[in-house]
Length: 79
Image 1: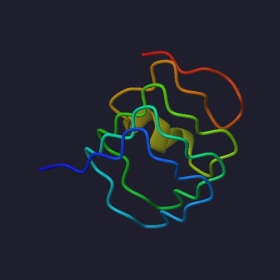
Image 2 (image 1 turned 180 degrees about the horizontal axis):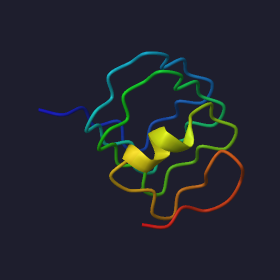
Image 3 (image 1 turned 30 degrees about the horizontal axis):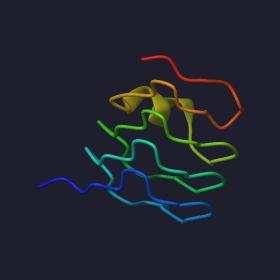
Image 4 (image 1 turned 90 degrees about the vertical axis):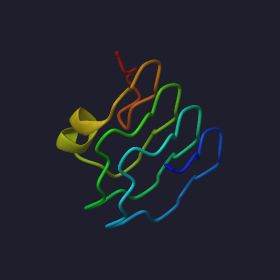
């Protein structure tokens, strides 16, 4: 079973190198979190706040959903 971190406050959390593949992080607040080297394949970030989070475009591209998410640069995600 995949982890459900939906709605959690993960502000400033260090996820460096973590395997978060398939995790539900919808509506979570991961502002300023560090996702360096983390596996974000299939993560649901819909409605999540990722403002200032440390992650690459490649990691964002691997996410299942960025719908209505606030991205690290303050822009909003699409689908």
